[in-house]
Amino acid sequence: MALEKAERYRLLNEPWQAESICMDILEAEPDNRKAIVTLILAITDDFGASSLADMNRARQLLLRLPEYERHYYAGLICERQGNSMFNKHTPNSDFTAYEWLIDAMEYYEKAEAIRPQGNDDSILRWNTCARLIMHYDLKPRDEKYIEQPLE
Image 1 (tube, rainbow, N blue to C red):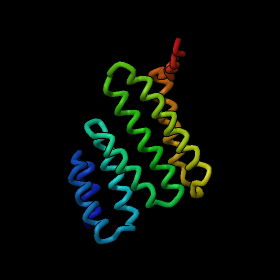
Image 2 (image 1 turned 135 degrees about the vertical axis):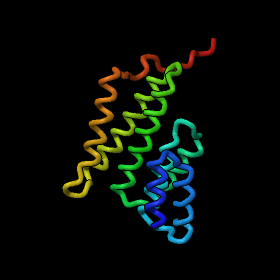
Image 3 (image 1 turned 30 degrees about the vertical axis):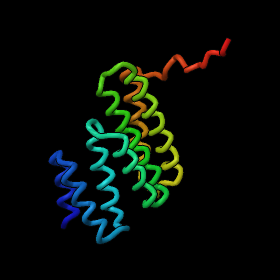
């Protein structure tokens, strides 16, 4: 029942409320996979307004998931961070978004290699990232930082 409320709060665009409910659930049941996943999703729902600490919290939760889900949700974290960067429209945000989306695609490839039979989620997410990159013509940075030699 509490988990359903957390999911409902996510749908109502109140991720902080969903986070709070998931943390209550995880206090009572530390290995509740649905609560862990819902908490990851709630944290990443707010990436546009969140901090690096929030991303690190989401990544720490991955360690509590089985291998397939660990790769899949690592990809989702990267994809959502990429989308968040893209939507900021700041200098270099396109390049940063591209890098995050490429990272996401790599995680989705790892998930695909070990996905449960009939589960195409990682393939669908990979395709979404690829289409976003192609649609907006996102590219990597042309310039790499090169340290100049001392004279």
